[in-house]
Image 1 (spheres, rainbow, N blue to C red):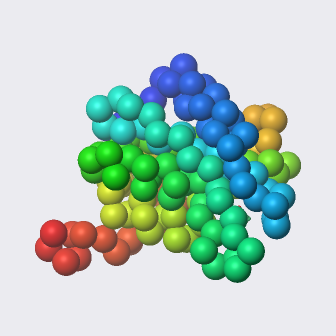
Image 2 (cartoon, rainbow, N blue to C red; image 1 turned 120 degrees about the vertical axis):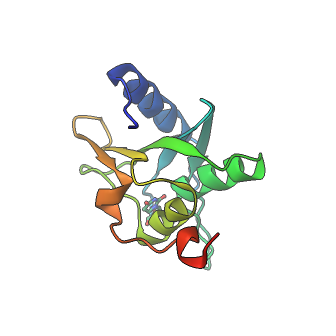
Image 3 (tube, protein in one colour; image 1 turned 45 degrees about the vertical axis):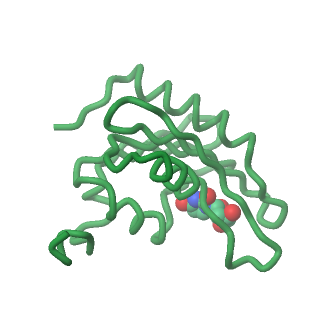
Length: 139
Ligand code: THU
């Protein structure tokens, strides 16, 4: 079972909030930060990086995952995400599919609204049930 203490949740949210300050979002002005906890206890931060052509925009979650995977990490425990909305911002479908590549069903997704007055903690399985992943290709 993969459980986090309240202290770990708060720390990941702190780091996601810090990452949000790095966001490049001149078009949407919706700034997002993420903090990804690896299985061995390291944290990778990410932010959304937008583009004038729109399509190349990268979400905060994927920035964090790609940094970590580049460094050799393949197993993860949790991610915290905090944006600038009044409501919590849950990961988009593309980011959920990236999670499906590297995360187990009990990977924890923490989301918070801009001032952290609303926080949700959910296992990956509830955000993307019946996911398609490496197991389907016998990898
Ligand atoms: N965004 C994220 O960074 N993560 C999500 O899960 C949802 C959307 C970003 C992409 C874009 O820069 C902005 O939020 C508005 O969609």
